[in-house]
Amino acid sequence: MKDKIRIANAGGFWGDDLGVLRRQLEGGDVDYISSDFLAEVTMSILRKQQLKNESLGYVTDFVDQIVDVADLMKEKGVRMITNAGGINPIGCARKILTELKKKGISIKIAVVEGDNIIERIDEFYPSKANFKNMDTGDEFKDIFENIQSANIYLGVPPLLKALESGADLILAGRVTDTSVTMAPMIYELGWKLDDWDKLAAGLVAGHIIECGAQSTGGNFTDWQKVKRWDNMGYPIVEMNKNGEFTVYKHENTGGLISIDTIREQLVYEMGNPAQYISPDVVADFSQLVLEKQGENRVLVKNAKGHPSTPYLKVSMAFEDGYKATSSIVISGGKVLIKAQEFEKIFWERLKHTYLKKNTEFVGYNACHQHLAEDIDPNEILLRLSVYDTDVSKIKDFSMSIAPLILSGPPGVAVTGGRARMQQVITYWPTLIPKTCISSIVYVLNEDGEIKETSEIPSVLGNEQEIAATQSSNSYQENVKKKKGVKMCAVPFREICLARSGDKGDTVNIGVLARSKAVYEFLKTELTSERITDMFFGLSKGKVTRFEIDNLLALNFLLDEALDGGGTKSLMIDAQGKTFASALLNQEVVVPEEVLGTILSD
Image (cartoon, rainbow, N blue to C red; front, side):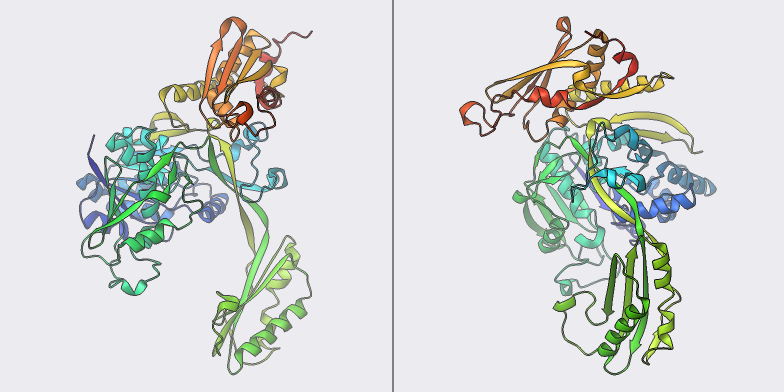
């Protein structure tokens, strides 16, 4: 194991500086390079592209980037991890290998898949996940028919497996922004998967560098302190085995790294600073210590972490109506009054009522509205937009801007033709239990053929927990392999009995199978992880399972489940009597052949 590792960032979004990958390789010594391309809106764009051309669905710009520097990467022994694979990482890998073969260059690529569940929605909903909107609480049934994409935010487990393959390039789909930086740290520094403080340090480091130059002076409030904007330096993390790390950039590059640039990036997209949730760890940012180490070098230490949640986030997108935008430039004296008159004329002529409409005066107050300074501009870009589910209303809108040019006040400049109607794809964030998801790592040869395949569970933890998850997954896979096996969703009460009680702050739930076949099924399906997922929020501690073969029974102990237990508890059910009923009401997908073994009274 190494004592420290250097990971450089080479981009924070699709559209970032394409030259930075080469600059990071040429500017100094690094061990790994990571880059993040996939914002939520990017996934929607990739899906649209793939619907037009099934061979696409990945970040095409990255192909050019990696082909340009692949020989330099191999020469310097630098490995790269990125999520540029989008929704078609295999396609991306094969395109890269094809282009490299033309140049006589050979690299080893490992591909991570398993995040794309668009074809598996029926498998999970409603029996295993309700897919409610995390932000609004809206029900999934309302948008179910319009779903276009659904991608899990995978964590580090499949990336670790890919690293074990020795691949030069690990190409993933939708993994978290921080995972591509965390995985090499865990792999090279020998961190344990339940060393929460070190995992939290890795997450913090990944969060700092995931947005590229945004931590090296980009978007910085005190932008005047940035002396050079040319040859912009991108961030590099040097992580020590103990979880302390330094953020720096290559010498003689533009930008700025200071305690303040790092502080600003730390609060970027921040919710509760004590609970920054990822698939791998829940990080506490509230105790971090930042120290200046020298020019453009900041030390970060004292990261604290907590066990990850039993869920993975799902980024979904669904068709949600149409929109269009039109604009014209208005110039001359009293331009604001003139623009306001144009706005009035336009909407009065159009007559339609839209679900949403908007007018913006670009050059006056479009960004800041009433907070903008009161100025008298010489020209304004009048920007008019609509949204609706009625296509005919959108078409009428798109044809209504041109007549204003000759039949309104003077001083108008044309900025384009008719407005183009766009399909609106709306983001839908939701959750799925980790135990539902496993990912796959493929290793490709230089001809793009798959030569190795590994299935990886999404649960981080000790070996027993992972083994239990793999057992559950393999059971389901065995069921799938049996041709003609029919599955049926039923409440647990149809296949088992249950009773629950208390012992201090611990609830026990005894589950008794209604047949031997049901018992064998329960041993693989009703794992500790499944109970943890089921009682998430009620049970705050460890869940332990015991098998009682002679009684065809499983007994579960749920620690910290009764608010302290006894008279201390403020829960209405301080003795846990209702936990069994809660379990029995949940649904489970069972092979019909197993149901057939239950004898009726």
